[in-house]
Image (cartoon, rainbow, N blue to C red; front, top):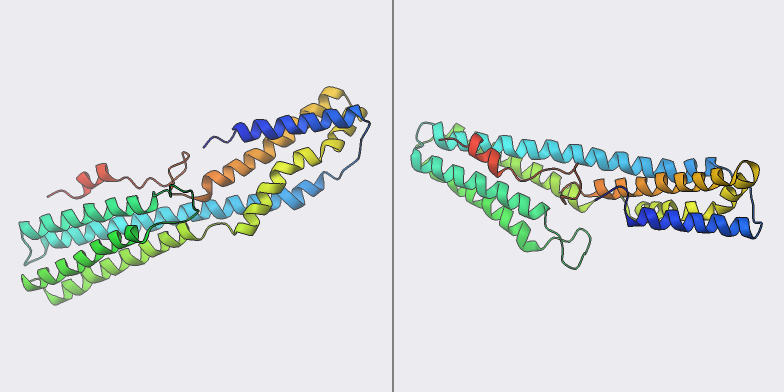
Length: 256
């Protein structure tokens, strides 16, 4: 997503048109500029900061999943009682898990339903967790010590917990009421403040008034676009999203 897009140009154009009409019909007003900071800037900055924290948390949880998965693979490969067959099984499970996690979080509903992910996508991830559990029992039967099996099950538990935390970030984002409030007023304020911009034209210079209208529009709509870009850290839209495609890394981490 671009921070300056067609919405930016549209709002800027409407703000300039409204300012022109206010000048044309002599509608000028001194409006408090502090109102924008209290009613608009503070809520949107709060939302952007919250979205950024969710992104950082998602990165931390995903890193934990990868670390636990690699530790489980090492257990399949190196513990006494394991063999090449169990190592290959562990490698396949880790690759499958990371691939299905990526497909789950990057899923986009074709009907554009927000936060809707089919149950089969979740079932596909938990199917791999089930296979991990069965694989651990196979290790037990092959002679791996009971204490090691208990430890490897704790690694799996950690992966499940971190996956659910990542799901919460995906499903529960900025409160819809706050998001709607920000979107409405961020786009309306540059137009509603046209009498103020017209007053600037009257007090200073015509060009100054229109320049202030453009500046207000760019700042407010760009903030809205930044918030929208950060809202879902998994959608792959924008440079700041979490990269869940670790297929290249897995070849390095899961060496025989």
